[in-house]
Length: 436
Image (cartoon, rainbow, N blue to C red):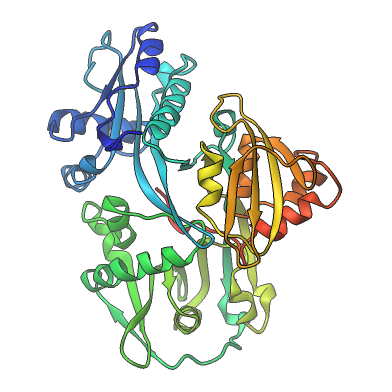
């Protein structure tokens, strides 16, 4: 185990593999302004974004000391200082049933189109898994732009989210009145409120991940994008005692030639009480001159449909996976969470990369605490599955029964998958409410 994950040097295995192809792997020094700027330009190129402005580079500069930043360089190019591939990673808290666990967050994975099919992504991702293991972390996690890439490295989709639109003129409101009040606030007050509420909500939401740095700031409109920032509005809910319990970030989009039919685009809604949740949704759905509210990255079991008179006016536009998990140490990972009752369940895991391969057994008490140990039970419930599906089951976001029906995992005896669902699945579906 490495005491300081961010100071782990270049992974020798990956560096050697890349060097054989004429490429150089570096850990970017946070104090090297030229190197961090070049890395930021490579990220923008990789995600087809405009070249970063000076203002954005200043925002991003504060993130580098808190992450391990990797650049892959081709010294044969005209601009060898500009990486042809990138990845960043850091330890972050992940909320699990009954608490939280520190996992290795992986982000900003890019490969230049000129350097595809040279094994760069494989070298970087397998390197990140080795680094996470060296750091002593039981899980790695990421969000993805392409969903077909990461299963080969043992990641499995662990949370799902919903995008939808609401026809507010026909939906109607039937929810209970909330006792507090809502006030509109500016960006500074919204950030001050969000610094407390986002973390409180994250700790109560299985699947949510600690978010810091520029990623947090951009939830409220980045200073480097003043035009976008000016479009945002912030509504804060306070309970009857004047304590902030919820915050909504949204913007209004005017339809052409129809100033009475604005669309509200909900960017973020965080609520630490049911009253706050209801009050903020009612506020959004009853705004004047608005015909539609759209929302993304919402829970798949969103309570909103029970708060409107006509739930058919809530139209789902997309359901997709969001957080992907890679189990590295199954005993430590499954010991870090609680369970929804008592029972004993074994797992036999196939892991081509070797981290989580083998067997382990969960023995849970009625109160949800559990002992987890290596080895499989000689008899009794047992699931046999690949390591990517172990990540999908970890938070309870995927159904073992559904996976068994699909032939993706094997039960020792009928009913073993049903027991897994009873033990692993939390009261509400896990969800990740932001990107990282």
